Image 1 (spheres, one colour):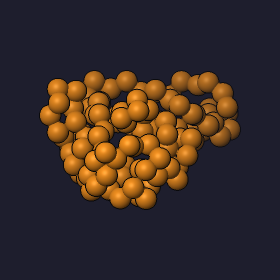
Image 2 (spheres, rainbow, N blue to C red; image 1 turned 90 degrees about the vertical axis):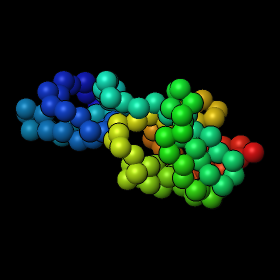
Image 3 (cartoon, rainbow, N blue to C red; image 1 turned 90 degrees about the horizontal axis):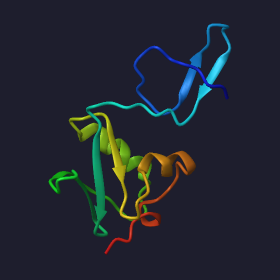
Image 4 (tube, rainbow, N blue to C red; image 1 turned 180 degrees about the vertical axis):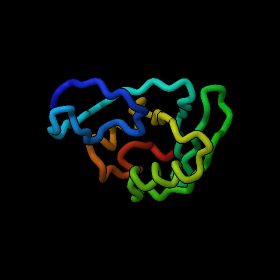
Length: 115
């Protein structure tokens, strides 16, 4: 893993790029600051995850079983969100993308209390 500068828009937080030398470069934990990134707080009641904006307005609600993978929830979010650039903060303060980076198989029940 090496540091490099990529002079093109980024669409993800990690990926593979070709360096000028032709070598494959792995980029991890790339932080992309976008002015249109939507910050959402996720709350779960055991059946529905509510994704709320910082002003408290509900942006999206998704039904989710405790045994569902968080990666599946994120994919459903991507399909339904108007903003394709968002960050989700879970009830315990963890960021969704960081959880999935560590454990792509993480379940809803492992990261929400589900009152």
